[in-house]
Figure 1: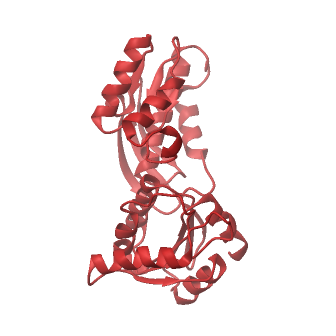
Figure 2: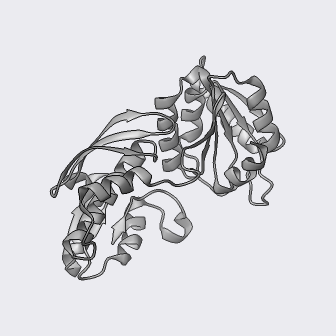
Figure 3: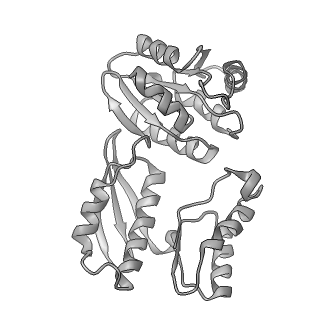
Length: 277
């Protein structure tokens, strides 16, 4: 059993705090099946450990058992170095980009190793695992779809995933070469994202989606405008487009060949963007 992390999403169903959300998700743990979990902060690790001990489930906290470091990163490839109690993998190349994806690699390594130890995967081995990590790909997760300018699609849609995507943006694109196109469903909690976004880009273009659940362009303009004013002098310009198509056209018109345009905020955002690329 695997828990890849805990974020503030779907709180109306799962609970208002990360401890309550984790308590809900720990319901997947079953006696006889080890639980591999990528959890932070430490209080969540201790909560999961106590739950597993109470029901007799072997617990494997990824942060304690896997040493992983980010060695190289670009918009299309990342190299990490990983060591587990079972193997030293050395350098692993992946098409999944960002520090959050490095943690997912670590989680996947331990999950596969648990299957090996149980005899379920009999012919895995380091080489097979290395090839699997190299070929793994998830469309819409920091996916570079074109160059000159580079256009990146990211379906990040809650505070944690949006901040993770911004962290990746900063690592692969200078602030003065970055434009963010953003649209989101109205019920999503953005938290720190607007304030961080206006510091990570030259321009933020917000837009409504065609979906009836969308946040309005005017509301997003007010939210990001307030973030810009709070950030002071060197914050991104903020503009409001009538829709995703116009936002993409404007971003492309103003972009240079070495710029990066990141289109993000929802699976719906990416779906609506694709016909305009």
